[in-house]
Amino acid sequence: MKVLVVSLIVITVVWILFRYKRQRDIKALLLSFGSVVAILTLGIIGSVTRTILPLYLAHMTLVLFAWCGLLYYMVRGRYVWWAILSPLVTIVLFILLSLLEGSRYENIWGSLF
Image (cartoon, rainbow, N blue to C red; front, side, top):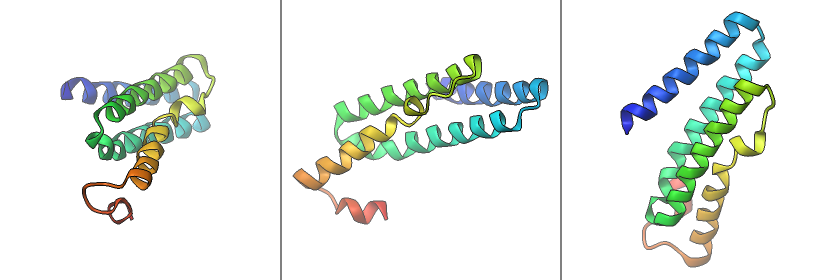
């Protein structure tokens, strides 16, 4: 599974660079690389939600959805920002649940800041 994830990231980066070499569009290059960084960052931050398994599975599904949104931008040229930032929903939901219900671990704000 890890090999599949890493190969997907490498293929996407190579595809972005190949598109830049053909089209010479710096805006599309920066937007694509920024989106890749945002999706990877949200995916890593989302590991906090692992304590609530259904929320974690929803987060991983939204990360996959965000990656598909990036690929849609690369194929069609239409940037779907809400799809790329969709994993942020589960992180915000986790923080709200932690504030409402509390956590059996440390304070959530201490681990985030």
